[in-house]
Figure 1 (cartoon, rainbow, N blue to C red):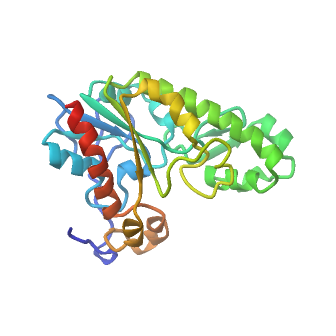
Figure 2 (figure 1 turned 90 degrees about the vertical axis):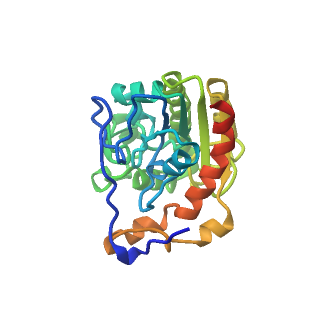
Amino acid sequence: MAFVHAGDGALDYFPCHYGSSRLTFRGPRRDLSGEYLAMLGGTETYGRFVTAPFAALVEEAIGIPVANLGCQNAGPDVYLADRPALEVAGAAHLAVLQLTGVTNMTNRYYTVHPRRNDRFIAATPLLRSIYRDVDFTEIHFTRHLIQALATRGADRFALIAAELKMLWVDRMKAVLQRLPRRAVLLWLADRPPPDKGQDDGLDTRPWLIDRQMIAALRPHAAAVVEHVISRQARDEGVQSMRFSPAEEGAALGLPGAAVHHEVAQALLPVIGRML
């Protein structure tokens, strides 16, 4: 494995577009005139700070173009608001959909940016009535918002969590309905999916996803790949990543090259059986 150190500077992600989609994806742009695969998800699928994300590694192994449709900090809202992107994914021979957390979605309590789903736009009157002790003008990202709400008591936060979980399942089903019949769900985390009611402490990611929620999606997908990152891959840290000095903090929280190689190896047998 070739390592690219942080001192080498920021990566060029060769940003590109597919069809008439307004979303900017990681390139170089693939030729989709023949058979191809599509991979959808968040920052991990996009492959921020790594030279070869798992989408590119799968492509190299199978010899078929793989369109990396991952969007940084994406929730299902990104794809449901961009019909051309879903049309590209739907025309693929096979699609992989990463299971991202529930927080980056517009809901009854708050709104998010339609393309940068991690951006908190506004609290609704309902949320303001429940959390009169929170100054929402000081909050700009959903991560900060959810942490602020969760630390003010489990009873109030349970209302928010229940809403987000329900909507996440509904919207993920809506995305899956627009994907090809061969759709693979990807769980990528430091531990297996927790049982219901065991993930409300926001200690791990993807936030608030449990096995019951994934089970609700299984009838709409051809397969589910659960990949738990190995300790060896976690211990690699940022040594194989490429970023500018100002980006080091962000890089620390994202998977490096070893993780992407593990994910590719986990996906390849499942994809191979479907090709």
